[in-house]
Length: 114
Image (cartoon, rainbow, N blue to C red; front, side, top):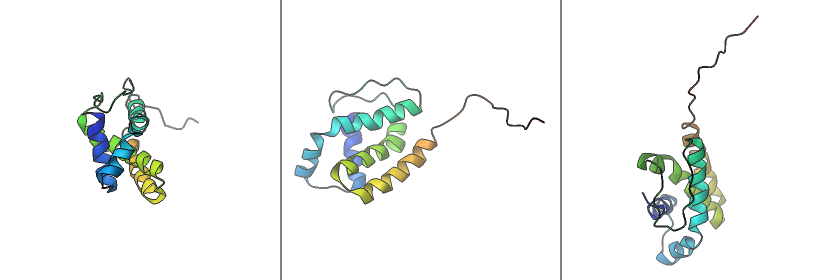
């Protein structure tokens, strides 16, 4: 999946329309994509290599990009547009989905000692 694919999906989720509006957002899309990308990579312990163009591929499974990262990117896009209500909605959704990524490989002893 390319950065452009995930960006267009996020823009579609937000409901932004108009080619000129989307084109103006594409001018600042790379830092927004990288912000969401690094966050998901860290959550899944995946090595992060920043994208340099919108045609770059993301080193994420498509399911992870479409089920989690797209909502973080939508949040960042809405923030950059000053849409606080939309940003808050996607922030809540993204935090819930990102929270589901956290897994522990260790079993932690939670029995009280006494």
